[in-house]
Image 1 (cartoon, rainbow, N blue to C red):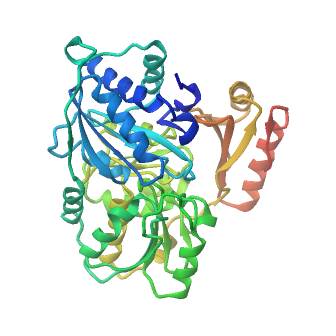
Image 2: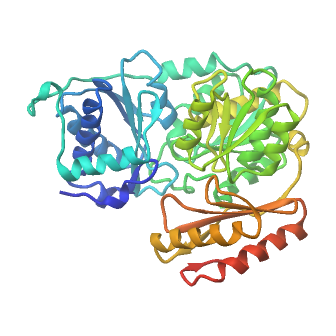
Length: 464
């Protein structure tokens, strides 16, 4: 049996396709997820789809075979971006759950599985339970028979998805946009939607190639944006949009070629959305700039800072009945006039819609947002996961004795008009750091405080 425990992560199952997902792994995972659904009495049908990677079709076929062997019915919804997979849970194709096979923003040799059950994110202990089901061979079958076989049908959901989005967006003036799909899954739907909305579109890397020959499909890494930034600087565009590998995250670039970070983009959305909703709670993760909190308060909203992780933010939005949320990594969620999941194409169109209703440029709108000095997200490697957790435990004790701190997720140390965040990565032996202040001088002061405290531990490599 091929079963690597390390691929069962906090939010998904993720690994190297030709080693971690070879042999009987995908078959057994399909069987395990179907068994979970059957044992929980949560349904009888499952939608399965995948991204454009070379390994995806093989993995998808094996996963479907495994799920069918339990008697569960399967709807194969093809090769699509992750948000289209989420969409399947809301449309009348009669499914109780969905699985997207995708490596997201990782290089082409990676792949993975993202799960949804009853319109809820499937993560944390539920992911770990899939490992246990496979390890213990604790499979369940509809009607109790191990010779069960479900029905398989194929459905093209893309036309419904495109029609749904087009019906929600109203562009009120001509907009000129550059789009970089990174040769990834966004190519399948994004250009067509933009054209149908009469957006003047220039495409970059919008032909599907799962080997990603031009750059890795991760727009949160600035070097992957060099082509689109250069193109914007050469032309006369309103903005640029760049999608990640499965099109659930977007990074936007203004008409001057400046990259607009997700937390700053969220400030623009907050100003628009708080005028329209009754529930004023806005959910965001601990890494986001204080500028977002400032804007939420200024616009009459209620800021709710929460743990990092797209599944955690989505769950918090549902429990708080919030209409909007997001996180620093680029996952942004609209639940005012949309379904509450992360859809990069929809997010970029909401921004274009806002810009089309004003004579201001994206640069102008960003200029109105409070300014802070901040570091990018920094990642400090630890010698092991255990050492990572030991260091974090000790840091919480020592720093909370000296400073005002928040421990929502890791430890956030407040000093003067700024803060320094340290949190354990959910997926790697890494401590994540971000620092922000109103002045460069205060930023450097917080760096010194964190450096002094981190220097006490030999099991971490860091540079501030």
